[in-house]
Image (cartoon, rainbow, N blue to C red; front, side, top):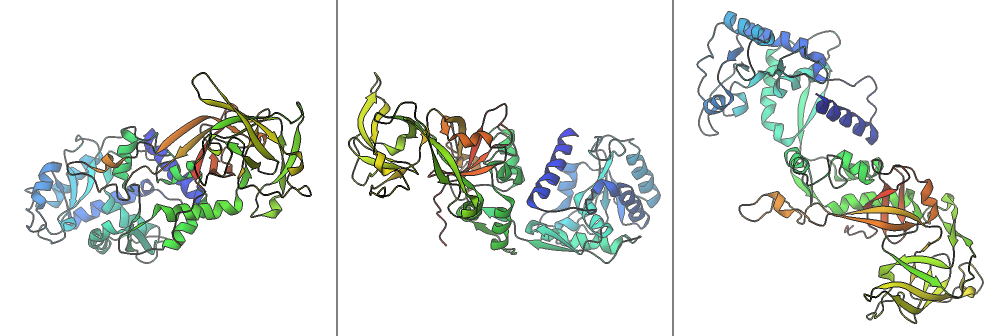
Length: 490
C-alpha cells in the first residue's frame, strides 16, 4: 500500500511539474468502486456476466488462439441467482485470492481474443492506497476504463496503440451498461496513438522495472531513466520536454526518435536560460610565479552571453589556480593548441599565461605547472587582444568550492536495445560506462549559493543540475544534463 501511494504521488507531482493543473479534475478509479460494483451486479442480472471457478491458467487454456476459437467454461451457464449469490460472497470475502472471478459473457468464438469472456472482477485481499480495506474484489482495467471515462464525461480517451484491440470491448461495455447519471454527458470514445520510442533506452514499464529491481539503476528517478522523475532529477526542464513533444507530434504508426533530438531540445532551452559558471572537473594545479603572493583580483565575467540582461558576476583570480588536466599536454601532437611547455594560453576573462616548468611526483605523474602571466593581457584592457590559439576556463584555488559531478551517458550501447545477440535480451546491451562520478571537482565560489534544482552551464563542459536528493549538509552534487556538443542533424 505504501508503494502504491508513492507511485500515485509521484505521478501527480510529475504531471504538475510538467505544467498541468488538475484543478477540480483529479479523479481516482477507487472513487467509483461502489458504482462499478452495482453495474457489475446489473450485468449479472441481465445475463451478461457470470462467476467462473476456473483458475487463471485454465482460463488461458480455454481462451483458444488467434486461429482457433475458445471453449466455453463449464460454469458459463450458471443461473443468474447463483451468479448473484457468488458475486456477493466474493465481495464479502468468503473466498481466497484467485478462487473465482467475474467474467463478461460475450463470445468465446470471437476473432478478437479480448472479447472471449474477459475477466472483469478478481479477488484480491489487499489494502488499497485509497479505499483501504473496504474491498477484496477489484475491477479489471478493461471494465473500469470505459466506465470511468463515462462518469467523468471524457470525450476522447487517449491510449497507446497496443490498446487498439481492446476498443471493441470498450464499446461493448458502453453498449451494455447503463452508466447514465447526474452530470454525465455524452459518450466517450477511445483514440489510439503510437507509443513514443527513443534510441538508446527502453520505454517499456516491464523493462524499466527490471532495471530497478536488478539494481542496474538506483531507482525510478535515476537520472539515466527515461521516466519523468528521472528526466526531472537529471535536470531536464519542463519547457524542453514540452517543446520536444510538440515537435515530434502524435501519430498512429510506431517510430523511434533519436535521443540526439531530445538532447537538442534540452540544449536549446538551457542555452537561453542557464547561467554560466566555471568548474574544473579534473583539476590540475598551476602556480603563477610572477603573480604577487596574497593578491586577489575580482574579474567581471558575463552570466549568459545569450542574455545580456543576465548581467555579470565577479570571479576571483589569484596566484594559484586550477585548470583542466585535458588543457595541458607535455608532448602535444599537431593541432593541440592549448597549454604545453613554453606555450601560451588565455584564461577566460583574465590573462594570458605561459607554461614554464612541469612538476611531477615520484611516480612521474604531473601534479603542478609553474607558469607566468602577462600583466598587459588582462581581458578588457587596451592592447589585451594579443592573439593566442586557445582559451580555457579556470578556478582560483584559494576560493574554489569542492563539488561532486556525475557524468551520465546513454544507458544502452545500441540505438535499439532489443537488438541483442541470439539467446540474450536487452540487458546484454547495457552501457557499463553510463555513469562516471568525479569527487574532486573544483568550482568558482558563486556555486556555494546554488540551491537543489538550479541549472548551470559549466563553461566548455556542458549543462549541469544541482541534484535535489543528494545535495545536502553543505555538499553540492551536480548531474550533467547534456554536454555542449549538439549531434542532432537539423
